[in-house]
Amino acid sequence: MDLLNAILTGLTSLLWVPLAPLPAWLVLVVWSALAAVLAGSMFRYTSNQRALADVGDRIRANLLGMRLFKEELGVTLRCQAQLLRAAALRFWYALPAFAAMLVPFVFLLVQLALRYEYRPLTPDESAVVVLHVAPEEWPHCRQVRLELPDGVVAETPALHDEVEHAIYWRIRPTRAGAFELRWQLGQNLVTKSLTVADDARRLQIVSPQRPGRGLWDRLLYAAEPALPGDSPARAVLVEYPRRSTPIFGFDVPWWLTFLVLSIVIAVLLRPVLKVKF
Image 1 (cartoon, rainbow, N blue to C red):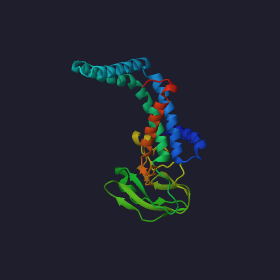
Image 2: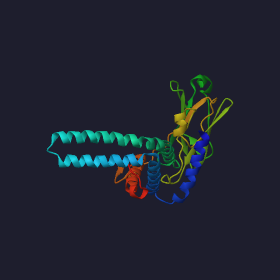
Image 3: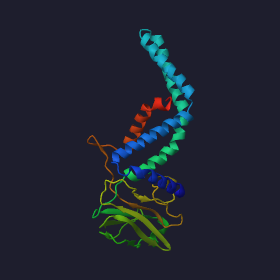
Image 4: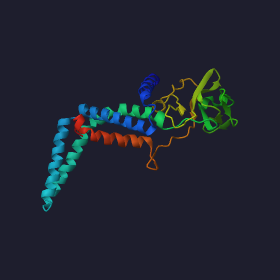
């Protein structure tokens, strides 16, 4: 999983280079359009297009029948039953396409989340760092010390949570840059990246968590390799501020904007892609 994440992150970063000068909202529109083309193409070649076209004809015929024979209760009920059956068939014929699209779209959303979900810290902006320790290692790691690079200072001493087996620090970067936080847990060195930028509006990779060995965490937090299986640490978190994406005065989640735009663009491109939904 770490190798796959590294390949996908590197490939996405290369594709991001020509989009770097654009505003964040326009970059999201471009990725939505690319996703729409990908989704439409995959839907065309992984779904039963002939069957979907036939179902579409049935739906239109039954809608017309309901309109022409609206005074005939029996005809109307039969048309409604046929509409329900056609809707179920449409979903069934489209199911293989949805399954095929699931994997690439999950990875694409993860890559977009690395840039849109959180923003970097800015100089003199504080953040909380959390080190989660395995319960069996907790008695040996309670006194672990956070090693900070030049350009980052600690504002508080370590705070220990005996229930969650976690240690908290509040830190503050004094300048922009890419930093590495370090902990020495016995023979194991644990590191975590820290991203600080002068302009927090600029899109760049932000890694809020270095995951443990859980598959779900390794999928969602793809910017850094997972902690080794024998590491006393289970996860390391930096509480970055969430990125705001205002649209017409409303703070709309970036993923909702992406999904809605992708669907709308895919529908608009349907004649060009020659695909039946």
